[in-house]
Length: 312
Image (cartoon, rainbow, N blue to C red; front, side):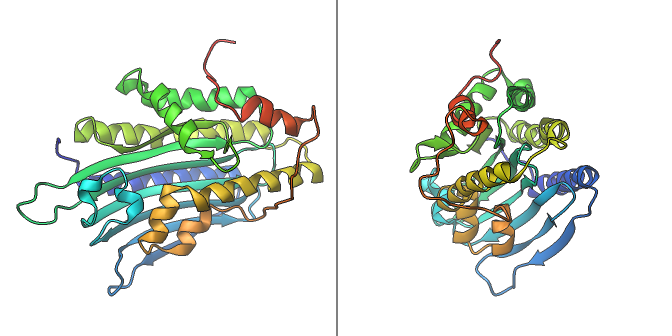
């Protein structure tokens, strides 16, 4: 395996990305993010620090969270070593930026983005160099579907990966469709995007460049959609449906999401891990949208695998 980039180099990029996104979203919302610097106590099993930027009850976002963390420990948790059994029990260093944005207007989709770097340390001086990998992606969760928005978002995802070869976008799109899927309900969380994990098949610098490109394309992927839909009128019906669909988001994050599981299993900062959850949510027994409604169209036309970039 080719040598990975230095942790300090990845950290510098991630901190700059976090601040760049915060500045742009403050412009969109008109409010300022609260910034929480945190550090794990020296006697805790998980060592590290981070910066959580959170905006609640803003002018546009009901909740927006953008977190940076860098943590290390003496033993990889099961969620991180599942795909790498050869490093189970090794020490590790993990750092990343993760965000989830929950706009108030139901016609503006929720969005998630994450970019991260893992390094598993060798067990001993004579047990090899250890291993490393990058991961990340972004995905869109609309409550009311617009094909124009879906095509724009997927176009940005394709553009992020195009410099590295034509196969990455379709491969990572399929991975995203398969990953962000609620198996117990038999439905996807949203319209997908791209997702990758355990990625080290390119040289270290090239793998890092691919991760950076995904992070750099987040704002062009999402902000035009948010600006396009922000003034769309809505009422209680739309808010009720948004709250019901947000329940699916909660179910996925607490049952399946590897990042959430890693954070909780490794003893991470709970408030920063769970900032991804929406502030208001509802569950209703056997709630079904009215046939032919805009709510029903989300299920029939959007919550299914589609090639959003295919010619009409």
